[in-house]
Image 1 (cartoon, rainbow, N blue to C red):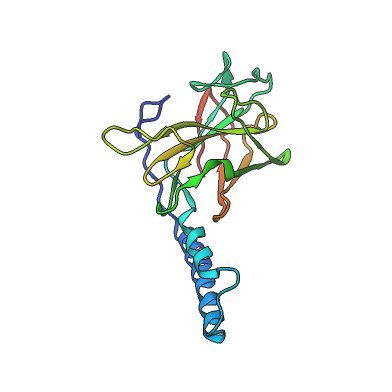
Image 2 (cartoon, helix red, strand yellow; image 1 turned 90 degrees about the vertical axis):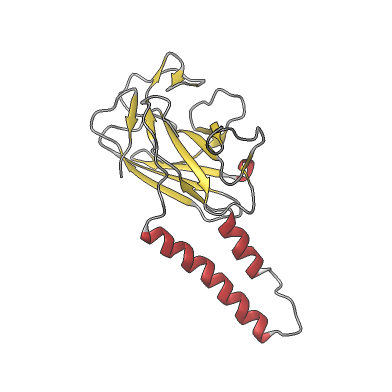
Length: 212
C-alpha cells in the first residue's frame, strides 16, 4: 500500500517471534483445556465451548499491516483526514494512523465490537468510536479501507475481512509529547488484543513515522 503522505510503499509487518509464541500459547492452551474437559466428560458437551471459542478468538485477531504515522493537525486535517478539533499550540502528535489486518480471515470482525485505549505520559484513556466522520479528541475511527492488488478496493461495510486493510485513526485526549512513548491497545471482541508500542521522536512534523 502506498502511503498517502510520503508516496512510499508500506510493507506488511509480520508477527514477531514473541507475538507468534504468545498467540500459539494462547490458542494451544485453550485447545488443550478443551480436550482435557472432553476426555474427562465423555457424555457431556463442553459447556462454554472452549475449543470453538479458542479458534474463533484466533480468527478474529489482528496484526499491524504497515507503517504507523503520527499527525499534527493542520487546517482541520490530520494528514488528509478531516477531524473535528482545532490544532493544539503545544508541539506533539495529535493523531495516529494504524493499518490493521486479520491474522486469519475466516471470521469477519465487526469493527463496532472493537475497543481502543491509549497509554502515554498523561495516563491511560479509553477512546470512543466516532461515527460522525469528524473524529474529535479521545476518539477513534476507521479512516480508510483497502482490499487486495490490483484494485485495492474494499467493501463499504464495517466488517474487517481477509485480506482487507483498515486504517484506524487514533486520537488521544491531548497531544503526545515529543520524545515520549505511546501504547495503543486495540481489543476485538472476541479476539486477542493487539498491543502496539511506539517511540515518539524528539522532533515531530506534520507527518511523522513512529518507530519501535
